[in-house]
Length: 247
Length: 311
Image (tube, rainbow over all chains, first blue to last red; front, side, top):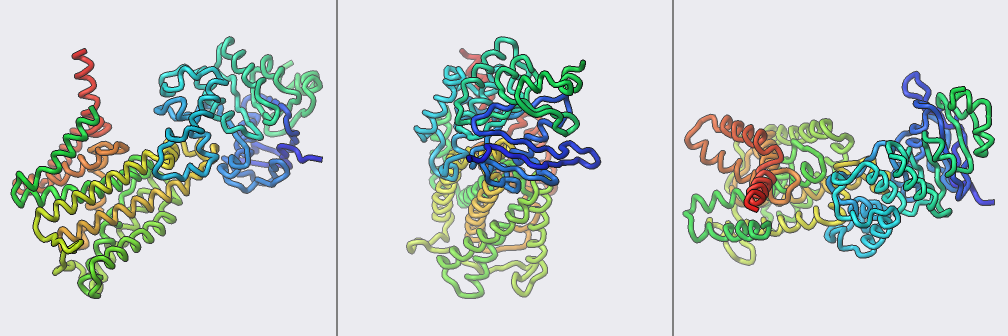
């Protein structure tokens, strides 16, 4: 019996009197595609921030492939194969696209402590960065600074940075936010092509697009899990309709 | 273009001993020392996003240790230099642990507080530091038997050390580690999510900057052959910070240009004006208004614009 890729048990977090995560428990199996939905303010991103280590939960436990990571700082979680993207794009605006992806690759290598050789002098990093950019269709823009490219392309760079790390578990925070219909289907195809060695947990508002990508869906509201299970069952559930679809 | 500018500056640094009198050669030596100091501060301010108002600690402590060891305890210059740099680096390691509990304004205040403690000690612990009288009667070292007592020989010595310092710091910020440092400056949270340890990256840089601050301190004590608590004061830290910002923080050569400007103003203007600080303030204001990124990036943009027009 292999341990789950991600196991969250009894997670709680409150900001003052406002409970933003209340007794959240969920299990994501290796290779699974999990969609997390819920209205604005349901605590989806807060949950991600606790999984990635940006926020400390008040209580509860987070396990990555069976190992307790609740107390680890974010960078140690990244070293263990956890990668994430951000709802609000956080790239290095002045640097080139390739440099952004290279930084992600450097983060997992001991050479990040190298104090005399420039990052551009690592042929393996350059090769992998360009491969990741090719995968998201941005290779021809590799030398452009982030500030030069369009919003939709930046979303794809966010994905490339995360994918280049070949994470074991990938957290995608609204990867489709703010994209046009055309860009949406591009990014959707990209997410669909992520290899199964990577477990994907995704927050997304656009149900029409995102539902196709997931086998299982978790519905959050007011920091609680309302429904959790197989996609069609969750969509058909009366509580989902009540909370999310507004009928 | 950059190469031409670099060659011009490098070439002009070789000229003072042949063209200028002792006064100007000495001034040039002081500029080199101030430049090393400003460059080391720039590692923190410009490349690390850690604005420190206590960098004089490293210059002052290295200078004081060397002064005490050579004058009072009969150490040779070689041993004194090694001990003073090791001591300064150890202190930077310790101060870094304290100061890096905070970032931004908190970091600035802690570095200021720590350096004020040292300044107070230098004033009050007069049985050790000789207090307000300072330590006098020091000598310059004679590396490989070459005396550094003449202005020209000292200038060459300072130029060699400054060149090594500039190259070492340039390699440092251009390296893979330098890329991590700039990443942590711009997006610490993202960097942590990518697997970088922001705290350790900042701390390592803090210690490295302390090392070069200490080297500047050694040159300082060799040059002046005298040390006074003011070298540890907030003014000393602030002048360096002013030089970094005026010249262009986060650029490779900018802080050296800024440090030269501050030192020239201080030396020239103070001969004619009692309130030379006021003039420095005005010049600084002008730079901030006209070239907010600093002199070096400002001129870079200016020449780019001129060339663009010609085309």
